[in-house]
Image 1 (tube, helix red, strand yellow):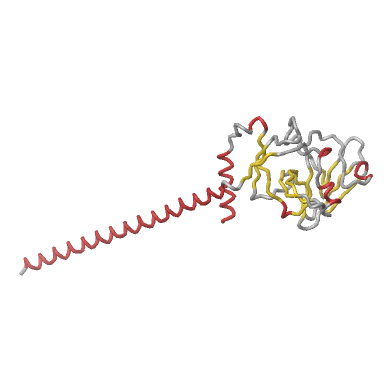
Image 2 (cartoon, rainbow, N blue to C red):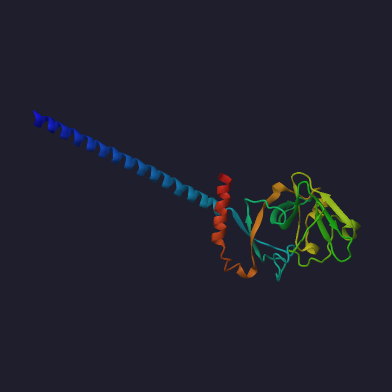
Length: 245
């Protein structure tokens, strides 16, 4: 009798051990399955985000002298693309940034222009030409330190075509939904100083901004590249992730 009871106890213990092993095996399989699903999800998400990241930047040639010396500083021919720009289409830019804008004139002609963002909605831009040796630009009565100009001591026209544009003070307050920009080559640039009077009353609508210029590739690096493709890719990834979260 005792032998039968001992045998039953042994069989019971063996069954419990087998059940425990089965439960542990099933748990391991579940954990492995969850890990595989998570890994697949992460890899798939990375691939999808990477595909979109490739489209964050637009690579475009820049024509004309309006942004000299920042862009096309020594272009031999102002009528053909020379330097190139990478445009971040996920950013509209802020004060002092270079932006690309889709501008449509009052005659219905549409073109893409590259300029520097000077002011936004609610700002008052004042261009002071009373000094015979230097033109000063103010935004909300704060003098701009424009180190990006070819010379910080130069004369250029103000807003509009009045006499004050050349020798006096002209100003404009930007209304909601609009921006104000100028080219760095102030004496050879069609920009908001003209548009504010000829086309839109407050220059350019925010919705017409294509993006912010993050990289400028000089003419001598256009064919060889500037070795910043990886940097642009990861910046593109960050832009996509920031939009998602």
